[in-house]
Amino acid sequence: MNTTRTTPPPSTPTHSLTAHELALEAAGTAVALALKLPAPLRTLGDQLIRSASSVPANLAEGAGRAGRDRLHHWRIAYASALEADSHLRLLLGAGTVDRAAAQRALDLLDRVRALTWRLIHPRR
Image (cartoon, rainbow, N blue to C red):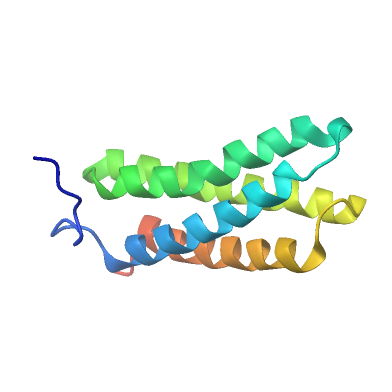
């Protein structure tokens, strides 16, 4: 029987779960914006979708790993959040996406990066 885990593994910091939830929301918004782009910008939309969806995927995979492997996935999530941020800012500058929705995604990505930074660089 397949069951869905509703609680984090014992070694998973709670920051990773919060970051994952925020990353899912940011990715959902980014994907919705990308799907509305005109044809000449579809390749940029595809890049936005890939980078935004990589953030929650790597946070989740990192939460299921340990040691350096865990950090590796969290670093990828951090870098993907930077990449998605860059794509959104470019589309905002071009005036091709809804400003309020894009700003919401940017704010979420900023929070995700802050939480992910703490995962990568825990206080000692």
